[in-house]
Amino acid sequence: MIDHGFISAERSMHDHRSVRVKLTQKGLTLRDRLSDMQQRHLKLLDQSTMTEADLQRCLAVLEQLERFWSYGSRAQPLSASTQA
Image 1: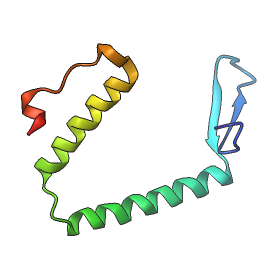
Image 2 (image 1 turned 180 degrees about the horizontal axis):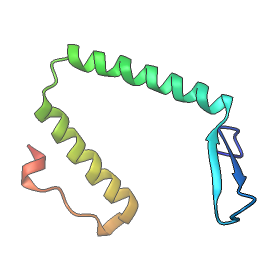
Image 3 (image 1 turned 180 degrees about the vertical axis):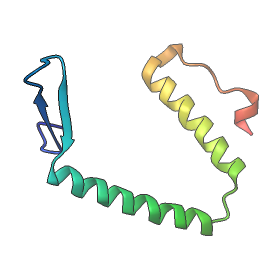
Image 4 (image 1 turned 60 degrees about the vertical axis):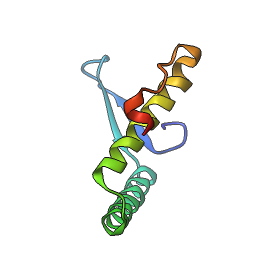
């Protein structure tokens, strides 16, 4: 993120273990755009027919995909409760 100009980091003169990290103007602009996008998505979700249960099932499947992609063949198989 530093290399792409979204944050800056400055080591403390008093304690070299400490680093102050802050958003650059580019980072602040990105944060604002992402925040606006999230708010639009939340409004769209409120208007959709998806239920909380639908979203929970989706989350469970996405977490299983993440484990599969992270651990490959060692991933847990889909359980009967998340296949429905």
